[in-house]
Length: 299
Image (cartoon, rainbow, N blue to C red; front, side, top):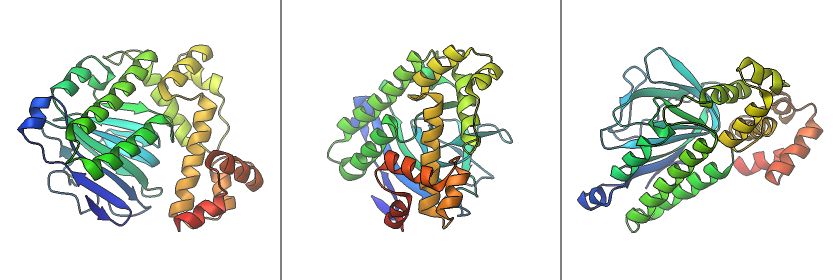
């Protein structure tokens, strides 16, 4: 494993036994990009480093799970057609698919990723929402996926040489759970159901963290009744719409507390809390500590 300050990258050499097994992990990493910090980081190997001008295409034998844990930014699969991404966005990057992405310079972001390939994965992709191009899935910030992915990356970085097959199967199982949850939300393999509307809703929520959102009106604008919207939203993200907005607010406030010197009262206002006292109570309930204590821990 290579470490660069708080960031870590681990590459896993793939041999013929891993290929014959049917699924393998190519590497894993966790990185934080501060506001206005150059991106991408220059320490990546030539196989993965890219410039915004040229973009990147993964090799034919590797896909990548890219998860945005905090902050926001954009990704492009066609030059000039940017797709906004916010905290809680899982991006499944397909082998051979050109792309480029970067964080918003004003916010930076925190990303986690795992490379994976093999015939078993190809089978899952062929029958699930993972086959869509592009494939972006909204998940609850700090939810089950976030916790599972962080634990998986820690394992890959510490014991990939000893347990390559176990870790590959764990990665495949995690993606299978994502696909099953999406299917429960009515997302078909060709992406023709409600996933587009729900993703638009999550992006709208991410852009309006500081405001009060009329969720029934939002559902109507997206062409859905509120009951159907709420059911699909919960199945797709794991949270009700308001709970999802509050989770993003807490994640955004944590990012600002850790990466900036913005006064806590201003962070409270920017993330939609009516008062510093209310923000402090809500933050403590969600994280177990006060905003000021959280900032001291990350200093």
